Amino acid sequence: MRLDQGISAASASPRPRASQKNGVPREIEGFVISRQVEGCTPATLKTYSLRLPLFFRYLEEHGGPHSLQEIERADIDRYLLHLQQQDLSPFYIHAIFRALRAFFNWLVAEEFLERSPMRTMKAPRLPRLAKPFLGEAQRDALLELCPRSTFVGARNAAIIWLLWGSGMRVGECASLEIRDLDWNQSRIRVFGKGQRERWAPFTKHAKKAVWRYLSHRRDELPQLWLTEERRPAGRWMIHSQMERLIERAGLRGLVKDRNHIFRRTWAWRNLKAGIPIKYIMAAGGWSTVTMLMRYVAAMESEEAMGANWQE
Image (cartoon, rainbow, N blue to C red):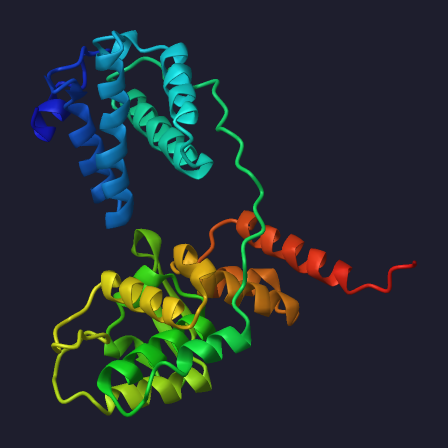
């Protein structure tokens, strides 16, 4: 079903599922398009496109409801239990839950449904794992693998220093353009989730590393990061380069966490330095304090281990 057709028919509430393809409702396409218009990141859109159909294929394979209106909470509970029985990560299952909840809420808002079957459901609990932080010795081990005399080495060193000193997400760092660097004010213009603009710190070490990298450039391209073939690079380049460096540095335990460990470490370091949380939220692009409070708890736990405990 075309999106404009779905919108024009919105007055007929509630509406049955217009059509299916391999058991998957066409409304998912409209939902993804609406989220794209609202400014969701490509990664989030891909998550919706890949994970939402899995639920409806499960219903089809297990004799579940054949229309959106017939789906009940019990159907979703059974699906989540099925995922748990597959020994899938609780974080993956939690992401599935969030995607389904967003989809059903959208169906209600667009008057495809009168009410969401998930309206009284609570998200599955997540384990509180103590995630690692990156120490200065580990950072230096990564930098030692980045010879500044080469284009790739200078580029990777600049990426490490920017991520270390700015709190940017990997995707935000990957999309930077040279004009986003404010050398005089020591700040970087960042476009975060929903294309919200903010300013992140541009530290002296990051400045030096980026300048050294740019000295290898002989082009007029606006993008900050280029591949070894001197073409504009995406976030995949940063992911692959950081993964390779982490493995070479013998830090294999950090490979799966390569996307967020610099950002988490930046917040943790600044919290320990006494920077007010509101400033860290503003510079790092956090909309809520929830995640930062986890870092506070980690910091307090570390400090507790350094206390003069009695024998």
